[in-house]
Amino acid sequence: MNRAYQRILAVGVVALTALCGSGCAPPIPHEEVPDGWALNVHQPGEWWTQPLIPRSVVMQRCPQRFGWASDPDLTRVTALPPGTSIEYSFLTDDYHCSIGWSQPASEVKAAAADLATEVGLRRICSSSGLPMDAGWRFLGHKPTEGVGDLPDPRASGIDTWDSTTAAFVDEYGTVVGCLVDHLGEAGTTRAVDLSVGADGPTTPNGAACPVESRDMARNDDGAVDEYQLRGAGAVRGQDGRVLTRAATLRIGLVGDSVTTSHPVVDGIAIVDARVKPKAAVHFEWDDPPPVEGTIYDAAGRLMATCRG
Image 1: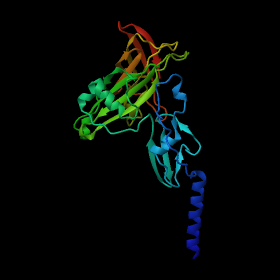
Image 2: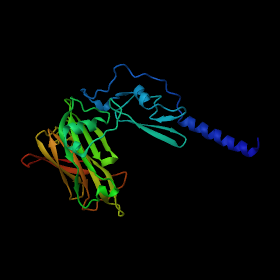
Image 3: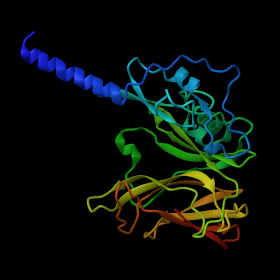
Image 4: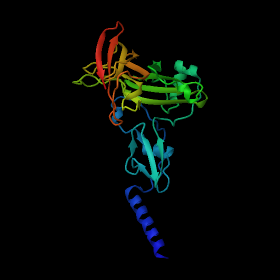
């Protein structure tokens, strides 16, 4: 064996040893899913603080390849909160496995008309793996509102592009916000978020808004070019109580005059908008600007304000 080859081999051994020392976890024992196991989100208590998904279910859906490490380390945890994303890695490769809810996510075929009916939205949202069963009460939906000089999504070549946000709630005040995008023949996508729709603690600076901005685009000057507000969540007064008599939420970026209006049903705002601001609202990617809103009753009287 010549010296050059010895050096190459030594470097390879050192690199592999360092990799395994930092991330190569021992094999995870095979665990069977408990008989009759199902994730029941219809439960009292602070579900958002509890580990609800056994590691065995992660193993069933996302088998770890030999010699790969996982983040989080599945050799150390025994359960994971819903919606966790597991990443397996080896050398420079990685793949993600998004887990959650009581069923695996599935493909769904839908027509644009399905985005306007409870039956259609229940079916589409259930394909997320969180079945919209009888325990979820349908509150309504809000088609995406476009405000300002926004580019037409159909310019990307997709024949149709319809989107909406649906809201559901259960008897314990758990809220599901379901974001649905129908892309014509390209298919239908959906994402679900859970939030707490019950009364919350008193906040000295007022209640937080039920949604935050997402999918921001920045122009060459470092200002917000456009953004989205999508989701469902409770509107609250400064005392933390849900405003069940509220009818409307108006919301926009702090520092901008453009706001959008969204319905509130039984204290739950159903929000969906794409917005191009008028003001030059500067931001950094790791520090997006907050939102602020005003909440009104059916007669148009101001009930409360919120801020992200």
